[in-house]
Length: 577
Ligand code: FES
Image (cartoon, rainbow, N blue to C red):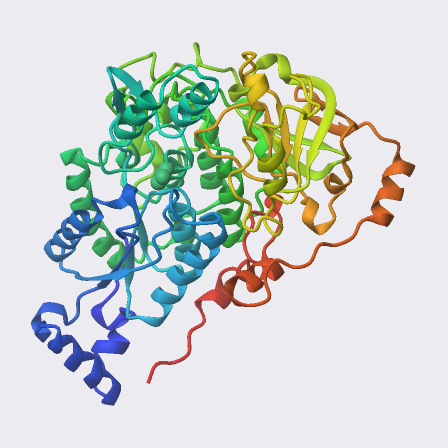
């Protein structure tokens, strides 16, 4: 029997329920908004953190969805309060939404702390919104449930199915190589994003919303439902209903997140062949809960986890197909003993109970463990003399012949240098070269943008080259593909040994052996290190200045150092009078 809170035990009681001068102000101002006492007295106040904005195409339906959430909250006897928070729109925000992920995490936490919230519905989906909202909610540790935006419908152009991001890169390369016309390119532009919802390939959004579900933060099956589907609206209302009960049950993130549920989420990301970005986000999410998720743990799970989701860019299909094939519950069930079924979820049941009846309806889209898309190694963690704290690659998205490769480095000092020279016919580069980009990490770029799918020089594209080994301390969009080594830690801008690589050096990549080295003698590297000069800081003021001082490296999740303290301290609040 779950112990239930009394109305007097609600956190919001301190704002509304007591009889003092301050609570008079809270009640009179609530009356000003048109609510009489009967409508809210003694009810859980449910904050709805909504990342809707007119700059976020992935969340265009959130204006409607929030009404459905409110409907559910009212029906369950709660008092819904919509609180807009930062939108983090992947296509529009420069230099990268990653710079602001921690900003939204802080905003979510502090909004919940400073207002009379008893529980929270987190509305996100576009890439960084999911980890940011989860990080903030975990640190605040009020009952919290996640509402994933859902993927958009398949793209379509002249009868061809288009996938977000992946087909953008593909057709852009074709345009540069002269294989399609400008008119074709405009057709792709019009058809690639044709409904509300987040990217429908296995990009960061689909990866992270699925991770949120596997972690136990959504109602079962929610993350796979396409945004325009009426079942998405129904699930939104149910989410509103459920959070009210979660408040009475006092079911909090700290009751849900364990090392086991983190492993479940990581396994899920890998079985989906999810975005490499999920590594950084999952580490940050885990650390907010006081759980140390290391790159080595990630690599261990990757070795044993087969890729079952046949979704682009690694596979063939899109999220809409995945939903029709049974969605995430079906894939989790197929993962069998690789999922810890005892882990608790927001609906009060274990994940094992939630997926017990799930079925696969299309075995090409969701593969069986007996016939996976890839047997394992959906991701690999590399180490070596230029990445002592780790780097990552997604082997399934790379040309297999490049997974063991030694080539001559062609180094670009930063993004502008690369943009200026990459298509220069005089550039000394061939298909065996290794393209290297410096200053693209958490501090250096800043915010570690998704530049890691470094462009292949036009003259090589025209020769038919479609993949090369490319190395940076940047991230890469989950919809990207290629033999791209990413997240090198420590990054070049702060003097990591990656900064010492020069054009002409030989670089050795050996994915099966998890090795990444520059073949330069140690004494020469020491000489280069002694001559290395720290670049000037990017920012002198504002959020950027705080970011560059406090952001951790990729292997630690890129959270701010001062936000990693968990539990008791984060919950301490001043007495409210
Ligand atoms: Fe929002 Fe891709 S642009 S998820």
